Length: 124
Image 1 (cartoon, rainbow, N blue to C red):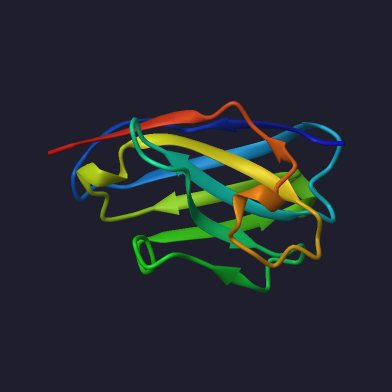
Image 2: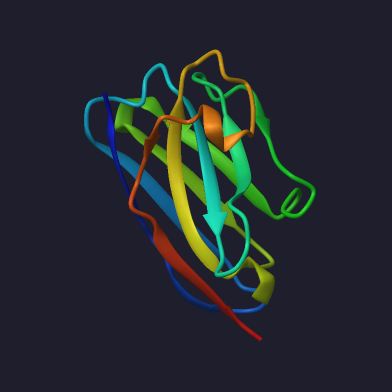
């Protein structure tokens, strides 16, 4: 098993940038398929990026494609989410999660391990 901890959330103005980190405080992220998800009050959980074990394959939903970048550094046991051109609708609690390496999906039901989340607030 792996235990995940997110950090880097905060308050930013629309159009600004923010970087999130997710470190495995117990265990290792290798060889998990990793993802970042977000959930805003009254809305369904939404995947905002996934990355395979080597970092060679990523995917994003249309809502963030071109603005968000997911990456990983297995040597540091860390996954990152770089968020640019932020919009007020990006406001949410952001979670990182781990799935079996064969998942190859943005379906949150496949992700077995979750962090506690970090709040991102984008002001207008």
